[in-house]
Length: 298
Image 1 (spheres, rainbow, N blue to C red):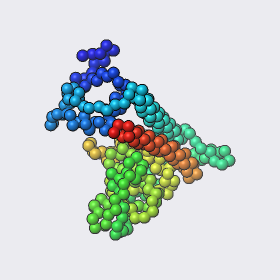
Image 2: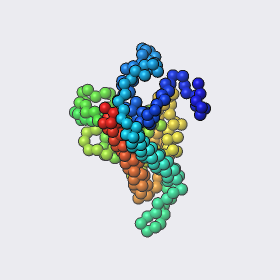
Image 3: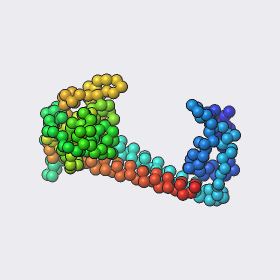
Image 4: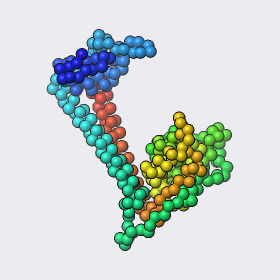
C-alpha cells in the first residue's frame, strides 16, 4: 500500500506511526534496543519480525520536550559526520585530480630560484628500482606482513613469528623506504611505504620495490590512474587477477629530477595527512555518538 505522499514501502517493512518524536524513536530503536528487537524475531533460515511481535517491545521514553532535545542533538552529530565525510570525499577528489596533472607533467614545480626543473625522462620501473631484491637468510624471529596486514597504505597489524613457524611465502626481508606493492588484485591498492626499524619480513604476495629515487615519489606514482590502468592491463587471472614482477618492472614511468620528485612527494603526502586527519575526526565523532547512545538509551 502506498502512502499519501506516493511512497510504496517494501512488504517486509514494519511502518511505525507514533505520537512521540519520530526522530528520537528512530535513534532509540537503533541503540541497544536492536538486540531486544532481534530477540522478538522468529525463524531459522529466514528470520521475520512481525508487527504483532514488535508491538510487544517495552519502551522507556522521556517526555516530548526531552525527546526533541535528544533528537536535535543526535541529528546535529550525524550532520557533523556527513559534513566530514563530504570534506574527505572532496579532498580525495582534489588529490586525484592533482595527481593526474602532476604525473602527466601538466603541473610543474619550480626550483628555489623560480625556474622550472629540467624536462622529465621516461624509464621502465625496473631501470630505477630493484624489484624483489635477493635477501640473505631470514632472522630467527621477525614481524610478518601478509596481504591482510596492510590497508590503504597503513600497516594495521603486526604478527611476530619464529622462522621455524613462518609460512613459505615469508621471504621479503624489508629495509626502511622499501615499497610493498600488492600484486594480487592490485586495484585494491593496499600498498605500503615501509618506514620501520627492526626485523620485518613480507609475503611474496607483494612485489618488494627498493628504489634509488625518492621512495615517496615512486609510492605516490604507483597509485596514479595511469599506472594502475597499466597494471590492470597486464594482469592475468579472473577471480584473483595478478601481475608478475617482471611485467610490473616493464611499466614505463615519468621521472623528474630528484628535487622535483621530492617536492611532488611532499605535496601529496601533506594531502594524505589531511585526509587521514579527517578520517580520524570521523571515527572520533562516531565513537562520541556511540557513547552518547549507550548513555542515553540504557
